[in-house]
Length: 232
Image 1 (tube, rainbow, N blue to C red):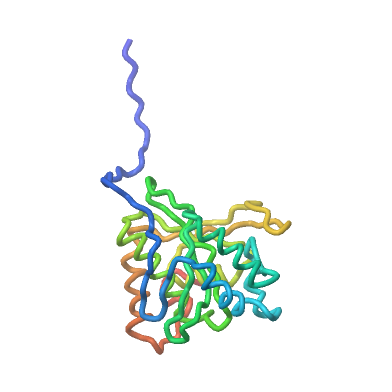
Image 2 (cartoon, rainbow, N blue to C red):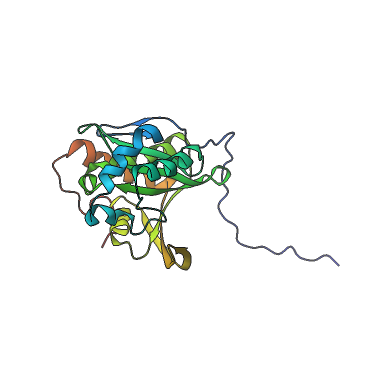
């Protein structure tokens, strides 16, 4: 007796690519900033100085799994470990106008055969926050992921209590996907993690809006709704 073949719903067929690489360890140059592979001996002092020395400056470490550091030497040792890593792949953020290092970013959780990765370990000095620095840093990284590497998905994750990071994700065009409850233990405390993403079929609109704000309307105040029409 021949059994009828059962049919079941299947996902959309995805065209195979001959080669999908990972982000390069190179300089990514923008109009306002340059992302450069970290150099512990050169970067440590400026990165330490702009993120340490007062309670206000050191608030940037609240939701990070590391920091603040006890000295420049301590930060340099941490950077030395990071400089050897390929995932996360770390970069120092150089501000062109001030000629100073003002923060760090990274590509991480890079799964090239699935064509997805995450942007994370993102932090900046107080002076660089709420400026074009983060927008152009993320823009350059998204261009690498979507335009050059043909990835399908870029993720953004943060502590669900980190309101600034959550607002930044929405402002930059990421879509909220949900909260992973009791996802991690960070510095001895529970972390529920908020997940966001941009997909390849959303990138063209996000890219257009980013470029409009960064390069065509430099005096425009970026609001939560500028890059994402679904923002609250």
